Image 1: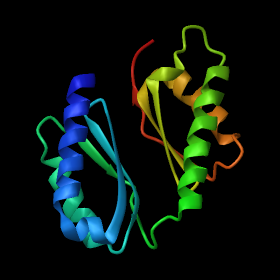
Image 2: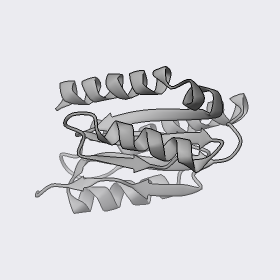
Image 3: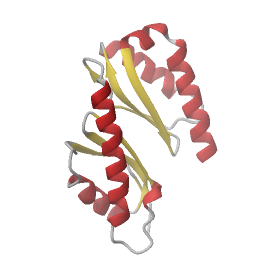
Length: 152
């Protein structure tokens, strides 16, 4: 699955780079986890994002696309730096989740304009604990859970 995620990511990036209108009118980040794709960032209008989202959904083996791209002005360098710093603080906070056997590297973290997106294969108890931990990290405005649940 990890190799397939990398292939999906590369294909999605290639689709983004080949679309001149999309490149000129958006700043879209792409993440893939367990054959699902998360789109974040900003775009001038919803139509170009929806068209891109549909093309990504047609990549072989993609099970779903989470389109979290906001319509509006492109993020500034300062906002992008702030999001990168927020992502690192969230990842660090995950090491404090106090559940026996919990591996924080199973959680994929993406931040965009203060929203934190969480993907991973977790038990419901782990997902709840992760969400609670992330909610209290300084700078987090919103937590979006995109977990897939597994049995304990």
